[in-house]
Length: 165
Image (cartoon, rainbow, N blue to C red; front, side):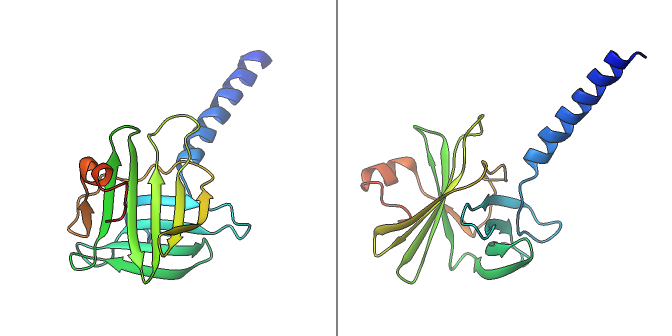
């Protein structure tokens, strides 16, 4: 093999390793647990939020923290579910829940080049924070669980885009 062939092979190998590294988004899910959604926030603290298949059967975990450790966790189940809405106009999948007077909505856009997931936090119905994730989330957004309640597109659109319901 000549130097040009070796250089081309090296560049190709580097390209493929970069693609797989981009698909491996940082998350806070326990080892062996499916990632539903994850987002590395641009907040200067390298914070990460993740929705994961829960440790307990039929649950979904919301986790917030850094790769060094989970700072807060909420467990969703049949009695306290998280909501999911797929916007048929944009193919964005939204996950949302309310905690006290706060509302959290995660947006996972259609998987295409340049799309980035996001998090919106509202208090008493007013948007107080919006974070764009460093990349899109490639989790199992269609995860089937009694802890995830699907909300029909026409319900959200007919209700003035009120989500979570």
